[in-house]
Length: 71
Image 1 (cartoon, rainbow, N blue to C red):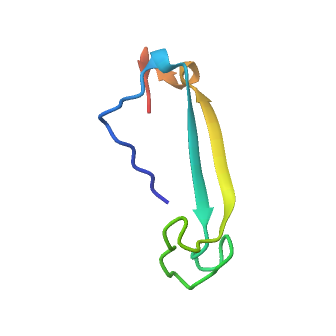
Image 2 (image 1 turned 90 degrees about the vertical axis):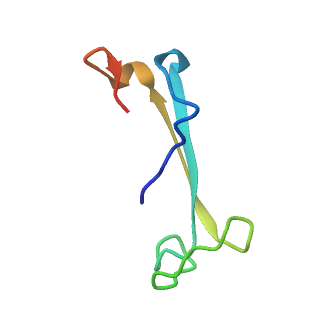
Image 3 (image 1 turned 60 degrees about the horizontal axis):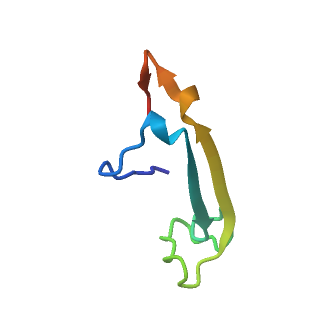
């Protein structure tokens, strides 16, 4: 999976902490239910089986490298 984030609302060290939140829904070829041999997942709310909620908080001070935020 590839996640793309907009660059117009940049994350800065002043944010101190960010949280990544997503849902994994059916249609992943057997992963997460609703399997469909590579079929595209339906849009959320369109009958998708969203069985996995993913949440992870990141402390930005732990993501510093050479004095800069390394994202």
